[in-house]
Length: 516
Image 1 (cartoon, rainbow, N blue to C red):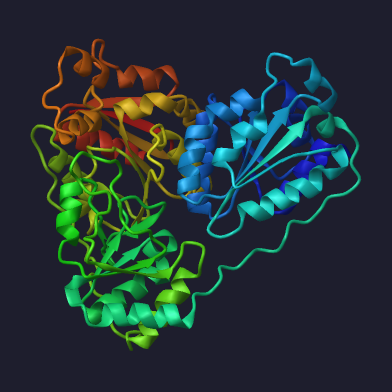
Image 2 (image 1 turned 45 degrees about the vertical axis):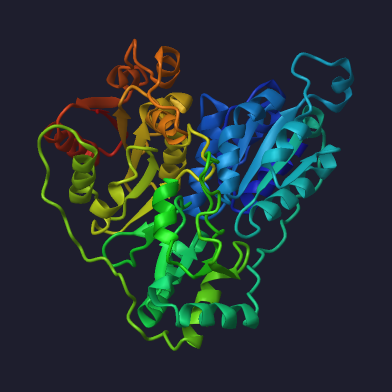
């Protein structure tokens, strides 16, 4: 057994059964070991940003880490933007990054790099294997870190000679860590803050607080106290739709958010942070809640959020109270006419299939889809947590690998999609069940809005040229078909309904260019 084989055995034994990969020469022994040892599914990405973003999407749905395989410092560097998103989403990932043989480093070959330095900002744990004998133990520790609640990124650097050198044992990873409980004092303070405030009190939820029993408990607390329950603007995985408690989403636009919170006197955090603006703007606040609002942290994201909400509900006598705000099944009438964002939202509310996974990188286009899809059949909604664009296509790839029995719907901006367009090829190769809506507005619409928000008025020629992506227009049907994917174009809501139904009926990937 060599070091690479001990690594694969360690990963597979610990349930790490998917490897999103873009390998190079230094990783060849690992690739060879994957051939000889059963139990690992390998998914090739043609760009490292696809690899790392897919690992993020996989964790959000599977609830367990995948591994990536990346080539030296430049390969890892190419994947950093989506590792940033994954870190903000608290996704557990084990990165395996090849390196030159230890004795070759001193010759400063062209691909020699400070891999630890590249990895550290986007990793919670970084280690370079010292010998082939230590590889399994190093991997076991990396897996243990990645599984620590709520999920962490571990990067193991594998010099080529530690992969081909001999190894003698396969080490077990540490036992799964449990989320620590919150204190009884935190429960008492939170219950008091919520009990007398009515709508001037807000329970802000994040992480597992926006799904499952935790979400139901929040609804019971709201029914008992009259408090508002909210989610952060972006959620790693939000459970929503008919039969589930509806949440108010903290608005993106600063003025809308400050208006939302202007009468809030008590803000209780459960797995969430006190809301802040995405960016600083002249003469606008960074913190969205008023300075007079009292903020109470019930549970940090690392703590047992569900148990904390159950304890608060118990203290309030709300455990048997029917939850407030449960959405009823409601399908809007199928819209027609020219494509509008309101029409697209209504169409999604009408046609969204049950148990779908919606991956949302529609940025500005999709902000208004919440109300029209609230009564759709139960579904999950995944959004970009770190704000680095190019998240949607890879995340949908990983989500589809994690849940092959569920339909994945991707809402994607045309500018964002170009960052990681290679993911289309991976979807086709692995026949992943993803229906993609690309909103082709031929511009970075969000940045045109930001130009106005900072008070700079209408863009001139130079600003307009760097904030639009026309001249030439991207042809998304041709781009998709060039990578082997079936695709269609919609210029009216009737055409969009026809194309969307075709995508839903397909068992593989399908792309719709939505001309807006």
